[in-house]
Amino acid sequence: MQANIKWLDDPRIFSVNQIKAHSDHQFYRNYDEWQRNNSSFQQSLNGRWQFNFFNNPQQLPDKLLLTGREIKNTTSILVPSEIELQGYAQNQYTNDRYPWEGKIYRRPAYILDKNDTQENSFSQGKDNTIGYYLKHFDLNPTLQNKNIRIRFEGVERAFYVFLNNHFIGYAEDSFTPSEFDLSQYIKNKNNLLTVVVFKHSTASWLEDQDMFRFLGIFRNVELLATESTHLEDLDLRPKLNHDNQSGLLAAHLSFIGKKDGFIHIYVKDHNGKSLFDQQYSIENQLNIDNIPFKSVHPWSNHDPYLYQLFIEVYSSNSTLLELIPYQFGFRRIEINDQHVVLLNGKRLIINGVNRHEWDAERGRAITLDDMKQDIKSFQKNNINAVRTCHYPDQIPWYYMCDQSGIYVMAENNMETHGTWQQADYNVPGSSPEWLDAVIDRARNNYETLKNHTSILFWSLGNESYAGEDIAKMNEFYKSHDKSRLTHYEGVSWTPQYRSRISDIESRMYLPPKQVEDYLKNNPDKPFVECEYMHDMGNSCGGMGDYIKLLDQYPQYLGGFIWDYIDQALTVTDKISGQKVLRYGGDFDDHHADNEFSGDGLMFANRTEKPAMQEVRYYYGLHK
View 1: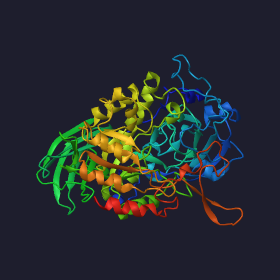
View 2 (view 1 turned 180 degrees about the vertical axis):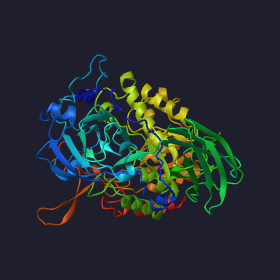
View 3 (view 1 turned 180 degrees about the horizontal axis):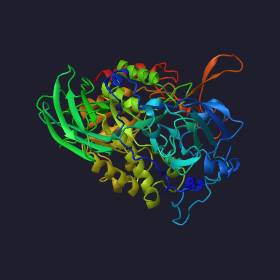
View 4 (view 1 turned 45 degrees about the horizontal axis):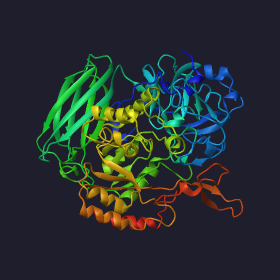
């Protein structure tokens, strides 16, 4: 198969040769590697790559795209990073308008006219900047003679992958991992990896989030080796019984490769006491149901108790092939007959924030240290919940939330408010041509993150109106996961879908009086403010009017403040020579939504704003 630049124009093509999404479990050769957190099955490709930048597809010769061949006169770029922040392209911040509005006329394919394919809309787009990445590498000895795949944890926005001049695959969905099998073409020495990244494709219509619009490989890239038998997917289903003292554990395991070995599964508590210990023969699909636990310690924000699972995969001659550790907790979320959300039988209160991934120096290419600082800030300021606005975060964040007891609303990578808020059409609406891409984003989100105890809600996306496509996304989650609730605010615009979308009534910035009007009129759904207390400038006053509703109406969950951290960038002021923070519109980025990117409780350098004192006090009333 050859790469085709026309895929950029077609919403029906969003993935080519991509490995199916699966659980985010780590795997190691033995216990020593696990304790050192250093898997010999993994090889990082982070670091300096050769690089060339093209302003548009017209500057990119077809032979480069079709073969991924090496080019001369390259510069160097750091991976992961944002191309714009490396000096190659224009920074731009915009909220709901698409970056091309007022400059290039575009309409989404098939939405206004079922025969309108919008051919060449992006494949010949004069604004469609391109990052051409090249990486020479040798395969580490510990990965040689094994099946090899590559994992891109985050690439904005559409990219083609080549190895040694062979086309490997294509992917969109910027914020979930993309994996491809390299085994057919990889060598032990002198490999050439080529990644061609386009800023725009039909995926751009689905990724209209309120943020700086970046391009490039902004999360980790690594090679992964798999043994002759490999655990491809792990689906854990811990269940806390209604006595809140006992539980059941189900585990569904999917293997690839040889099936002539066996596995050893055991579970330990905090003290290392063995609670379960059993061997099983390996099958393609191994389902272990209803393992009883007579006495369990429930997981919550106040007590984030996790159990340690180990899965040892053995060959037929009893050689340990791989070790899979995973921590999980027992908890139960439900809505009772009075339409109150309960966690482990007790009313759930959300003291939440919306959180973009952001760093003042690196943009969205944040580090583990950034995440650790945010967790400490949450705990200091009585923040117990986070909405991953408006895309899946880096995987380590969910592990940190599990361990710290932070409740997570895990949001799909979808926002399209620049269509229906600024025009008279809607993406994805009820379009069959966009449905598969929408469901794929739900599948990526769910399959990758399904084992995280901290995730209480699946959020279908943000500000994308509602139609049949989002209704079917809700159906996807409900058919795959009955242990969590679904959330989507946008259905408030289309009440005819209200019975099919979202377990919770969700609004943005609804004044306290209107929240109370809903709550005192026999509500049929619990209520959450998925965004409230918009923290721009000297704001966050009057928070007490929302908080007092928690004492009056048990159907009220609370909400998620917009938002946690400013999107601003550190630059050196030309006059003073001092490091300063700059916002949208400060980079000759017009059109732009200017200082609207600065509405966090934290400055972009992770310094608290005065408003955080208000949050710490009021959230402390319902810890």
